[in-house]
Length: 296
Ligand SMILES: NC(=O)c1ccc[n+]([C@@H]2O[C@H](COP(=O)([O-])OP(=O)(O)OC[C@H]3O[C@@H](n4cnc5c(N)ncnc54)[C@H](OP(=O)(O)O)[C@@H]3O)[C@@H](O)[C@H]2O)c1
Image (cartoon, rainbow, N blue to C red; front, side):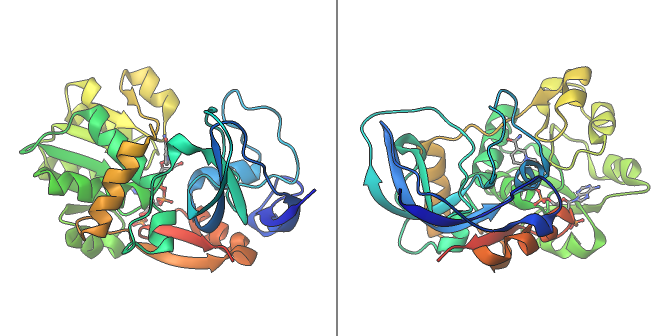
């Protein structure tokens, strides 16, 4: 059996459990493609998977557990017809994915940027769609400096939406650079938000009970969404937003990046061998844009 290198854990635990492991190289099944991974984005969900969280309905974990749910790479082989979605395990030299989930990378887009885009960008794009945000409206984004927040802020601004985004003091200029009106989170935040409003829609990309403030700010709860807090969204009758990935969405995002209309902020790139450092970085919960693993 052909083997490959990956970054994974032999048991759930802290970031420093992530090691290089040898795992069987996956074979593309019907409708799948084998991709040689060049870069993989690192997401908070990967930190959760490493720590023992399983997506609802997922089978029990098989060790070593290899995280990773967004990537860019080179197609090396194909299977025959279509299969469903699963956690990709793309902190590895190779990944197998349904061919309906990938599109060609434009020449001018770097591997790190492309690798950091497929989940975060598509989540942001999905959220704009679900919240039905239109030109001339004002959108509040909690966590606007993060991987998803940075994307939704730019996508909304280029649609002619006024974006108010929350971040730490260190990231206020970064948000201004993305075209948003920055607001510092923390003590006194609800008052500062009231001053920066009124708002037509809200995306909560930070959790921490923000939705409780949001329902005071926007009357129509179908225009308040969270990608973080499923339980509170359900309790308050707000939207739960999950990433809906498809080729059209990904192609549109890559095209925007290729034409300089969308910027992927990569704050740090680590080799696969240092996946644990990448996790420690993301797990800090702070920092602007994306963390990426470079493979090979
Ligand atoms: N539902 C889905 O399909 C889906 C998809 C992707 C992600 N998610 C979830 O969405 C969340 C965001 O993901 P991400 O990839 O954008 O994470 P990320 O890049 O790690 O986000 C970190 C950002 O959160 C900001 N932040 C920290 N504390 C905050 C607070 N109290 N208020 C506002 N912002 C705060 C930080 O800003 P400072 O550095 O300025 O502190 C930092 O920029 C995660 O919980 C992730 O699991 C869900």
